[in-house]
Length: 305
View 1: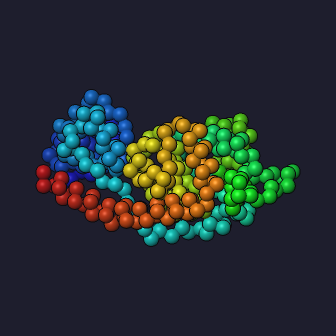
View 2: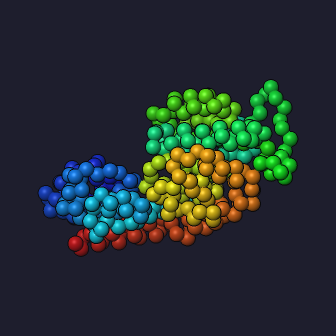
View 3: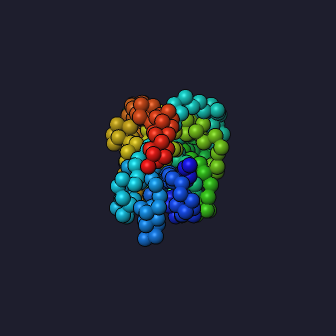
């Protein structure tokens, strides 16, 4: 009765055409901004019954390309509020080589170009050059004393950055780390099946992508009570309330990203308040129950058309 498809129109043209030819209803769940060609716009408008978009930003991007407004609606992704990370934060931090009161900044995702992890590495290089006292010390150098109130850290005297994930850009990112002499400071930890446990061990979460839909990883970070810094793109724009649950910056603006990092590092109470507000926002607005109910309503609506 109904063909349900995932992702962008370009990867589902066969399904759209097959549903049309066999006379059944079709519903496409689009999860990321993407450019459409003339034929794809025509296929969606003429043959697809309906499209669900994971964020208003994704929907608006399709409308700008000629998709009919009544053809697509927005259904935000949801997350299970009761998720319990399987690995304790202390174990994660020990695995990553952190000790005591060191602060952990992190990100997660496929190591591909659109994720722009090189921007995060460059921002950490800028931040560390302006605040050399925050670097993790190597064995040849004694640890630095804690910051005084006028310093950057407050309660932390060392910082480390970890990027979870694997992909085609790994070698390039490692070279960027080495070029900026950040080997003791920024690490590529590889793919982790229990990524949410690592996110739970972080103090600050960063999403530097140039294109997303409605990133679950940001939902996870906010649910874990972490302050989030993200690029100003579809998804984060609707998830993050600027200055209340996190900070936004223009994609590629490494200096502003570095400034946001410095602000959160220097203000532990702000990290706490942003994290608490973010967790509350996710629980109240992006529950898995609400998501399932809305998707089911769309199924019912399509079957009536």
